[in-house]
Amino acid sequence: MALARAAARTRQNTLARWRRRLTLTLLTVALLAFTLIVIIPFIWMLLMSVRTTGEILNDPYGLPKTIRWQNYVKLLFDPSIRFYRYFINSVLVTTFALILTIFLATFGGYGFGRRRYEFKFRGTLFTMLLFGLMLPRQILYIPQFTMMSRYGLLNTRWSLVLVYTAMAMPVSTYLMATYFSQLPSELEDAARIDGCSDLGTFWRVMLPLARPALSTVILLNFLSFWNELLLAITMVTKPDLRTLPSAMMMFVGEHGSDYAMAAASLVTAMLPVLILYLILSDKFIEGLTAGAVKG
Image (cartoon, rainbow, N blue to C red; front, side, top):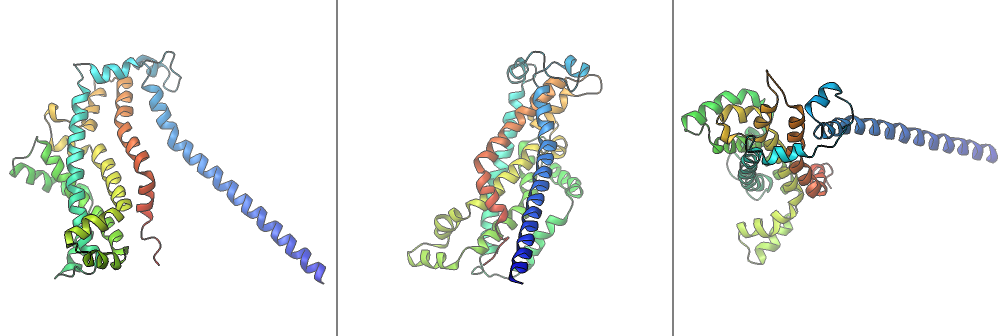
């Protein structure tokens, strides 16, 4: 009987190992297939950026006969394109919108996330803020355009900065409040014993501990602001103030298209996002998983 039980356990363990291996293999194949689906368009775009438009039209999926780095040189330094001007516009709009969003979201998240800051209608205000997450952005475009027109901010960078900040506030404040709520209150007590004011406690103790959530807010909003198109072409119609997404549209038109330059502009516009993600990737993942486990 003992031998039979041992043999049965051995068979069960063997079957369990094979099930785990099969599951791991299938999961690996699925992840590899998904990775290829995501990466192949980027590789194709990169190859298109070093070809001519004629080559692309004759053989869209072919390899470049000659690598043409001249496309990037023309894109960045040709005075008739002035791509650097649009790049600077995007940098200015994204930077100021990020600074304003981080400033408001960190203070707002700290106030909503720490229980010691109890004030009237605190829960109601936070609920109303979260309600902004459920509203489709498209229904806000007409009111936002009307407001910017009344304030005389159309065709200025500030219109994009203010609208981007307003649209980013609900999710940014929610992420910061969720992270701040998990930090132990003993840290604040120790800071107050050491003589820190409320602002000093926030700046010297709590905000450095919230760097993962802050990195998540920075990266998500940078990606959103940098790639936004519809508001950029609605609020700003002056060519000199165009941002990158709206400027890249000029390479593809009704009467002619320069696909090589369009691909080169896409690769160039993608680089800042890629670099920022590589810098903040560890903190970004930690910030996204904050609140998943409580204990």
